[in-house]
Image 1 (tube, one colour):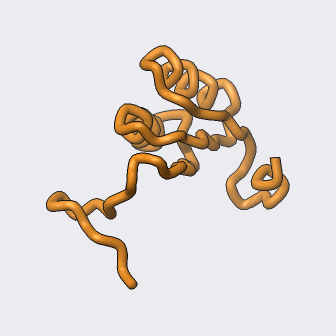
Image 2: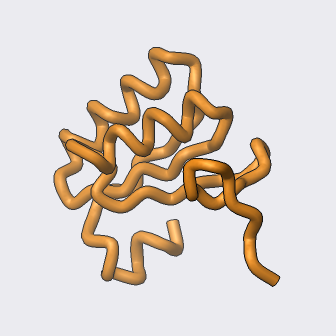
Length: 82
């Protein structure tokens, strides 16, 4: 079964879902984190640069969103167990 798609081509996600964004500390990754959080998602921000990830997480929280920062390389399985 495929996921339903929104008119813009994005995959539709119910509001209660959690989003994991790798590279969420800057650029497109940070923008995606913010957009998802503003849409009501709980965002797991992952970035190898902890300070950059914390800036994104702080902005999400300032906007009233919920998130957690999990720093480290996305390919490292240990961060996914936290």
